[in-house]
Image 1 (cartoon, rainbow, N blue to C red):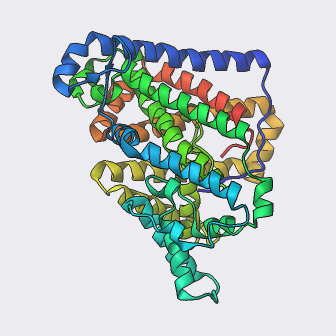
Image 2 (image 1 turned 180 degrees about the vertical axis):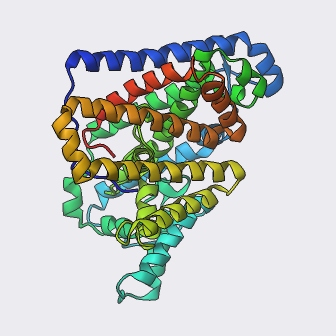
Image 3 (image 1 turned 135 degrees about the vertical axis):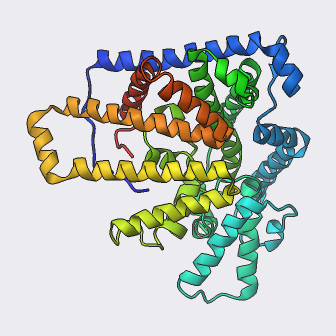
Length: 437
């Protein structure tokens, strides 16, 4: 769960990079088009089996099979969106009419009525561990209770996150008003950020109108008869929808939190430029990643006490995430794959980072060649990463069918071109992130 920030990839010829970009982008569009065609050809059967809803766009049905997106969008329309907007209005009014009053001065502002068990548990654990493991704090019990309630029931982060640790929350909330005003987002930032969130919301809605990926993944017959390109489109659509969904679910509360001078974790990075298990954990849910580092990985030894401690610490971190999500069998399989993926990637980094092998490679290959080899290895890692995410999103049956169709039945016809496209994805990711995870 760590990375080496000192590695730099060599630049490649611009023509070669352009080819990688075109192949990556083109494969996304064509596979999505094939999945769209399959969705429309089998729309009648999907309507009968999954009760597709009436669409927001004329001529389209709406796939409401993704419970999380449907649940949050329904509640957003009913009340949550309006309460969050109300929070933003109250926050701005307070900053205008009471510029010297911080959120931490009046505990009445923190007593909220609703409770979210999953994310609330992380916040309560963060508070408890900081109080038990940190230096003694000479403040009254009532003041500590007020801080706990403020942290636990902070409205923008209350329902679904993103996760922020207790220490970061308190430190940022106690920033003096004059210091916080210098970093306060302006109207232009808020308008642009709101427009981006609205755009992401529209993209998510369009995806579930144009491609019935969640309904298709629930039917093993459709998974078996999907054309090859549509099968790839289904895999990409599922992981991309998950990414866009969390841009909305994290983007809106994060934008509102900036009004209170908080610095929320960064939004997820596009999954199409993720080329490693370590990168996925580091850059998708950054708040949860930092939480796991601080409260699970580092206290258990991390990378400072040898390989066995690192393996154990990583395993327990993934075990915690598995149990936090529910501990089901498909989650156990997903956690195991991620643990093994991180271990393999860490082992390969240690191998290729050793002085002897690094010296050999530098003498016998160019920097560009080493980057191409790294992208080739990353293609295999990305294939397993996508497979693990499909198990997380669709269950073991989805992962099993993809494994059978791509790596068993299609080992000579499907797997090679798929790895070639994933090689292009990895090159784009290496170019996008000069400090590889």
